Amino acid sequence: MSAAAPAGASTRDRLIAACETCLRRDGLRRTTMVDVAEEAGVSRAALYKHFGDKATLVLAAIDSSRGGDSPDQRQDQ
Image 1: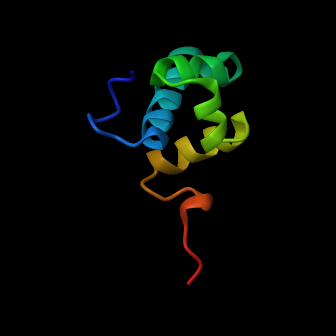
Image 2: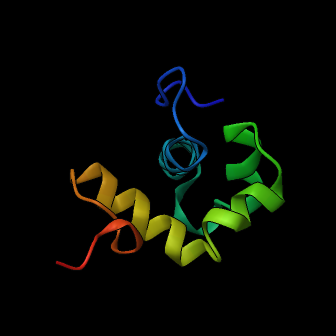
């Protein structure tokens, strides 16, 4: 699991932290969904349950690094 994810983090948070790790290490083009799942210690099915594609995952990681909620986590008020 990624060192950036705190112990007890949700699967979604672990995936985002793993994505950030993979992006730093391998870059956008070389980072794959399989890499992220392996880094987070989850199955590909678990990854795709939370993020339907690489673009959605990368956007969530960028948003998280900026301190915001990803669009699918925001509540309409």
